[in-house]
Length: 356
Image (cartoon, rainbow, N blue to C red; front, side, top):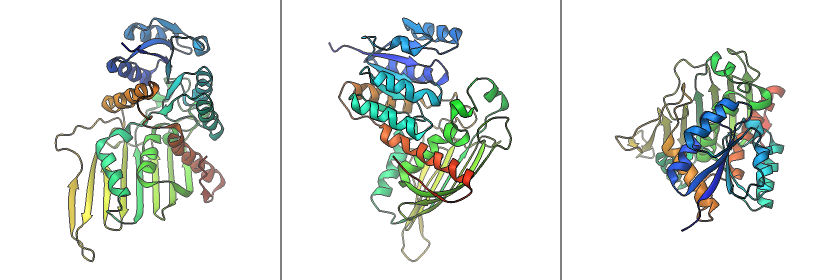
């Protein structure tokens, strides 16, 4: 019988629970250890709930443990790279929560360390696992709809003042790296790039309008895509009518012969049947009874089906049985774009987006 994959979880917060559940549900891995950071009580509760035999405060105590084959990093965003580099140097496979990290230099360091030590490095972007969005991607890449022309992306979520004061790191520049785009809206930014391809340049306006935090609660940007399309992006955590979708996102992609719309957690194809007339065929890409997880105002509402797919794929990739579903090289591109949006807002001008 094949040995189970030994998994450690770094961070014992809300999202770590989803990783722990997915590891247990998969059946091919076992939870060996967890690191709780600074909250001993939370760490003890986490270990007890999931039957984890070893719990430590500092993840460095776990480095070199021969029982640990893989690690799920669920710590604050700006701490991802340091942890990933350390575990990669010990030959441990890594699944990192979004965003990969919050600076270009840190993301490059963790990617280089994974390649140098021949370990898996994946990231968590559940939208990429949704079958209807995969269908939309295939339609767009087939050129069935012709040239892409206009892209409209919105992230509308709500985070209360208490959400930010409930943690030492939420809403801070040092640990969060950013706000409505880097932390909450990063799922939708990644989805947009997954479907449209890369943005070439941006002109942005980023601000903090309604919360006492160090990072943005509102952002907007004009986009020029490498494929020639034009676009607009908006993100906020101040909406009293959050988008009812898994990550609070909506996306409209207008093409030469039709449109893809992702809204209210559903994906629809609008196809023009006649070249010179307005004759639209509406084609829902979801099954009629498909359910939608709504986390626009409730981040604890996790799409566990998608999370399970990502964690199970990571386990398979760690065994060498599959390619990682969301590789770090791809996952970093959303952060590269958001960082350029921040810089464009700061400088008040159009800036090119450089993807490492």
